[in-house]
Image (cartoon, rainbow, N blue to C red; front, side):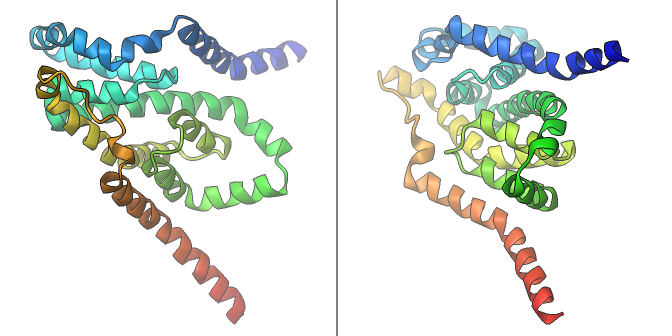
Length: 242
C-alpha cells in the first residue's frame, strides 16, 4: 500500500518537477537570447530560405518551437509572433503562432492540474473556495478576460485555471479566442518587418500597449465578463424576489 501511495505521488508530481527543471535550465542557458529581435534581424535571410526549402517541415518546426518556448515560459513570444508574420504572412503567421501558443499552454495546464488540483481543494481557504466556485460557473469567460488583457503574464494565466480544475475544452477555446487579437496585431507587424529592417529601424514591440490597440482589447475583455455580470445580477434579482 505504501509503495502504491509513493508511486502515485511520483506520478502526479514528476511531470511538474521536470517542467520546473527544464525552465531552470532554459534560464541558466539563457535561451531567451535566441528569441531577440537582433537575432531575427541577423538571420532573416537564412530563415526565409529554410522555410521556403523545408515547406511543411518548416511550419511544423515553427509551431513546435513556439509551443516549447511557451511551455518553458521563455521570454520572446512577441519576437516569435513577429517571426511568424515575417515568414508566413499575417494570416498563416497568426494561425501558426496561436496553434503553437495553445499547445504549449495546454501542456502546462494539464501538468499543473494533475499536480495541484487535490492540494488546492484540501487547503483552500474561504476566499479561495469562493473564487473556485465562481471560476467553475464561468471559467470560460474568466479565462477569456485574462487572455484578452495583455498585461497578465502568460505563464500565470496557464496555471490559474488548473488550480480550479477547469475543463480542457473550455481552456483551449478561451485560449485560442483570447490570444487571437494580440497575436494578429504582432503577426501583421511582422509581415512588414522586411521593410523595417531595410530602413535600419526596429518594430514597435510595445504596440499592443498603445491606446489604439490596448483600448479595443480592454473593451473586448469587458465584453467577455458581461455574461458573468448578467448572470450575477439575475441570481441576485431572483434571490431578492424569493
